Amino acid sequence: MDDRKLSVAAAIDAWDLTPVAARMMKRHGWTSAKTELIERKYRKFMGDASATEPPPAVDVFWHEHIIDTRDYASFCERVFGRFIDHIPSEHGCACSNCDKAPSVL
Picture 1: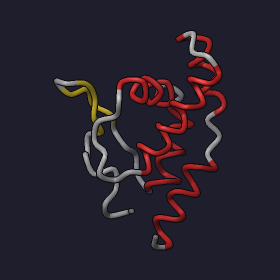
Picture 2: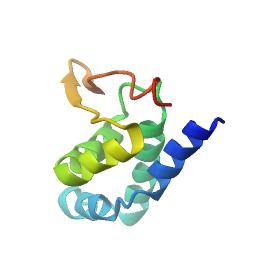
Picture 3: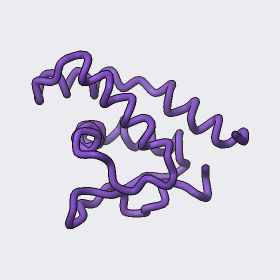
């Protein structure tokens, strides 16, 4: 793994998603175990430049992160160097760029 991929992975892993996880449990009734599992899958999805459409539970987690606009914008800037849009597709949702960052990763 090259240095840039390592730094992206490290930035994703280091980001505090505790507020997002807390909202998932409160708003969606998720257990702590389910929330932890989906958070790990969200982190993996965000770090996978080839992934363009998340599984449904990961998409819900992504939506919860996005509604904290300041944190999500800061996360995107820190991790990808730019904002990652999220636009619903016919079959679910996908990032608008569909290249979460080949130029970055």
